Length: 363
Ligand SMILES: O=C(O)C(=O)C[C@]1(C(=O)O)C=C[C@@H](O)C=C1
Image (spheres, helix red, strand yellow):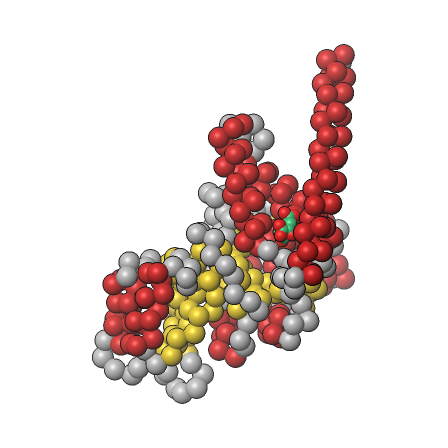
């Protein structure tokens, strides 16, 4: 016990030191904010934030052998910079709500707890908020490892001129939430279509007679469940706290490594960080080998194509557009040349954005 007391006293001294340094850091950030305002510069600098995190994770590995986990370094500094930024400017972020959706969780992970979050009811509304500059950023889901692409999000890029300025990838852990305490009482299960689909096998095995009802979001399912006895929602752990629901069963998704990718939308071009991705939209001519010729542009300049999706153009029947992700930034020479060639070989090319790749557990 004496030993614990002594060690805690040491921790107290360190905590005070951390606190002192945090306040010193906040003051410096405020000064940077004032200079940026005078010079009319963009206050939020995601490129700088990325640089800070990358540098510290590297130091943490090289100097300290990750005594403090690098994953935690990312989270701690995410929050420190979120708080410092809030002293310079209020960052407004719209996301596909309501509160406690996975998009909310992804937004918090990307912008930290100190941003001002605005839940909006539909993916289209997120695009509208960003396009009309009522918010600085928007966050929408775009694809899931089990269920595939969120077509609705891709289609919005045909209508709006917002840019992709970032991406967030989070593991999706789905739980069965209810006001009831036992599985036997559950007659109805509410959730978003994709969440219900992701738990198909578990539901067939454990609740074969329950009625499955689709809702607009996992969070909306929780709101309904609060008012209906004998019902359960499939939603996140954050939703269980937010709506004060019991977790009846944990991790019920069929595929245990289930991830969703979200896009961060904004209005400006992002600077090159060296770990970037570029998303493009293109339409090919109606002729033999058109897609082959288009994709040859990437092959010729050694640009790695990480994803390609086709969607109806909505202009003409059987007319398609392609959404593609490539590695690199539009200012990288090989990406620039590949896009020039792509423009010559297609009907239309629209760069949706070059942005820093998601910070994942692998780094
Ligand atoms: O370096 C800056 O430009 C700052 O404003 C400071 C700081 C930080 O806390 O490190 C805060 C907000 C920016 O988005 C980036 C970094």
